[in-house]
Image (tube, rainbow, N blue to C red; front, side, top):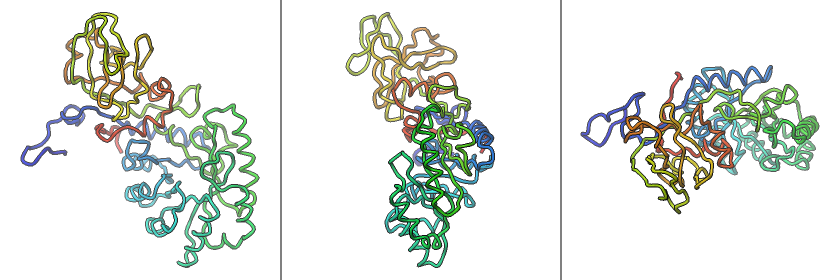
Length: 387
């Protein structure tokens, strides 16, 4: 249980174990997370369904997320960095863990010491890993990431052909996975998906036989031709949509609420917030809530006069965001909410079933990945739905 300063005693808590000092709370529904993985696992058919938990599990916490996914049956995880891999390894000693950053120069022992598998994306990385394995007289596992059109982090075709010209290099280590990454999987009709799939087939045919993986969240819903041996969903696990413009079959995992810290009456014609960009059109009651862009609520969600914007909720009452989002605060119009509900210390839901992460990012002109991964550390986390 959390404690305050020395000799202060136990911190008082509100319902669901939230400290009275909490200014904002993020509730993560682990039962919904497990349900989403189970659905993706079913869609992937015979292919194994992994879990992408990089960026601290998209801002939700690697440890509780990895534990919940493991309890549902997930055995393989992808993270970005060695440090993330170490955290995941502490939580799940028996899991297969891939490091998407690849092999950092001179850091081989940091991978093998924690049984982490680098995703190799260059000829230099393959040579270094093979040399390390030979020096240890041990065939350690690694994945190979080949370029099919993303042009971000993968082995280009010319290097791949140089690699296969020296076939004995594969005798030094265990090539446990050949993978690539779809650039446009969120758009099922984009012809680049098929181009990448065909190129992936032709390039991996040059390599020794190994399990294959191409699909992220969007690719998992593109059908069996994209599944291969393993799929790697990320955003869909956390309730975000995999395909732009289409229905989202995933359950909501994340809800966020912030405390009302101030209320005031504002006369018609007065302005709210930095820049005076929002002018009140009627006598109003404005609530300031303790959540801003330092907490992950994007500044692009600011609302000027006459513009549509995000809407929070106090119970069943909608409360529109008004004015600019600042570092620490958002202002919302609570004029139509009963005063016993819109009160100092009360809660305003700013993200959840009614206003999803995708709803917010559509208005902000970005994607759910960004908003979730920006959720700040001062937002108190609560995990529901078991482990």
